[in-house]
Image 1 (spheres, one colour):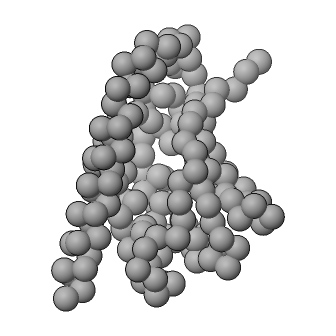
Image 2 (image 1 turned 90 degrees about the vertical axis):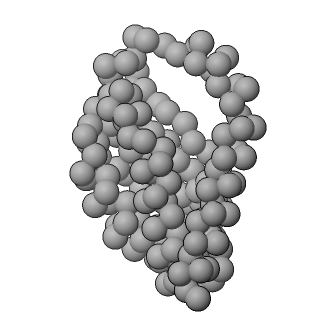
Amino acid sequence: MKLNIIFINFVKYFLTNCLILLIFYSNYMSVNAFTMNKYEDQSIFEELRLSVPFEYKETWLKAEKEIWEPWLAGQEGFLRRDIFYNKEKGEALILLNWKNKKLWKNISIEEVNEIQFIFEENVKESLKVSKNPFKLIYEGELYKEG
């Protein structure tokens, strides 16, 4: 029964990601055209903003440490991760520093989705909830200037 629920959640998560990819695919070509090649070998920061309700903050931090931290540490080009939290907004900011964009983007989306699925299952089990309470608000990239 538990495996059935996990499988159903995985399928829902997979289908949601496919839908999002289809929606944004049309913008991919125009975004790709604006890539600034001068930054390819430069250190890059992956920026993630998440909705993290304060009452779940400790569970979120624990899951980040147990699931994402060891996985990230094993990725070629990963340099460091900084986590910030805004209690008033109930939002988290994660900055992941990569040696360069090529090494970061060499990681397959399938592998990232697999780790995210494990993370979400861990959180749902810890909080005794049926869906992940931490929503991605924004994802982007930053280059250090100067």
